Length: 263
Length: 262
Image (tube, rainbow over all chains, first blue to last red; front, side):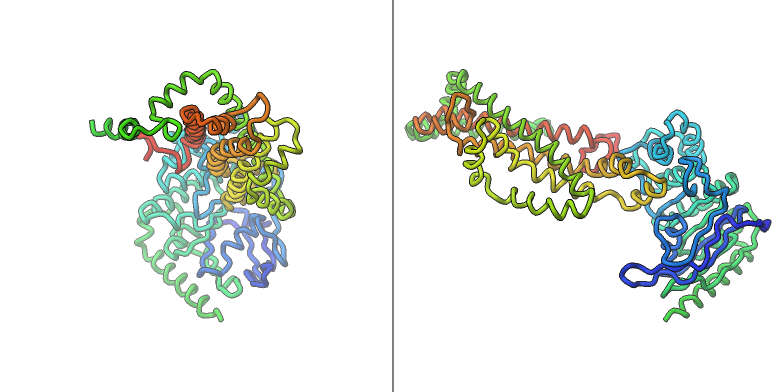
């Protein structure tokens, strides 16, 4: 991983207090390098992981602090304004009345790009998640894993430099989840983007990430910032390696400590 | 065979009921001005057709106009009310007041105020029918997936884009359910208003015909008119159910599933 001069995103001293007085985040500072990275945010429920993700995406406004984007990231291929961000929720969040193609077309549709002009990018994104044959099907005809793939394809179709994922595979069964983890890594390597991945699972975070940020609750803050120095590409063999086990122990310990610190 | 029998069951039941009815009337020698048999009603339907048909056209006209007004104005009102909290707070109580006040109580006023009887009846029927459309559609417009709404925001969608591409499709099942209720209610509203208006003037509908037949103790004609009203109601319901299946069939859980669906 080469150290870039200017970070893709610089989060500085970010705090978020809800209107009811609840303090979600306190004094969060985090730099994301311009070079591709998979960063996992891990922490117990209520530590503000999802809130941090929504703040980075601009879906919530911070109470204090700032989020600075490098200029390259602000050119949105789809709509030409605002940061170009891919976002995947815990639920597939598809429009049930629209076909798979129409769902992936959504970012382009909002930006005023015609179907014809977006066709290539949409089909490419669907090929990336192995769903090119399902373009004309409706969400209710798909399995949970397939719906999630459509959601990923929609997020990636406008080719964002950054993909935010909020516990995307948490509701899936273990087998589908492992498969999607591998698919995600393959896409990440092919597209060269930065991924911020929110998860509850130590194992998932170690398998996917080269960096894990452990968060502590009450109010949400960063407790540890760990590097996972295992080379990519990673495959099933990595799951049984000593390096993997060692990293899982390290992250678990940091998580335990973070939770112990909570008042 | 079993399936065919199941499909025929309601018709068989209806036929048996008619036979029992006819037999009972004949065996007890009940006079037709108390209860006519189904055959007498059928005869009235044919004989009185020149009188029944214009009345049917009139009632259907009022019902359908009131329904269309409810469908369009109800949707519009729901859009206005969900556009801002202020609008909702200002308007919703009045929609409720209009709904809970019995139409029988307001109808005489409307009939006095509005010169054109047809228009007065239409307004009464609309008052009864529009509320389920407004309240259902308002819930539907608010029921859009909050994550999808976040996604629209993330991609910089305008309020118009979010309304047309997210809120309206989300509201469609609720709107269509509202329409099914409004279909029946516009017929009820039209008939009740006509009862209040009475059979004044040359242009009158089935309800006025029922009133008049009642005064004359012409029970077969009364039953024939009643039958026509029921047929109109059933047809409205069937058409709206069909419309609902047509619009929602390919995606919504409420629609019946074909063999190709999981």
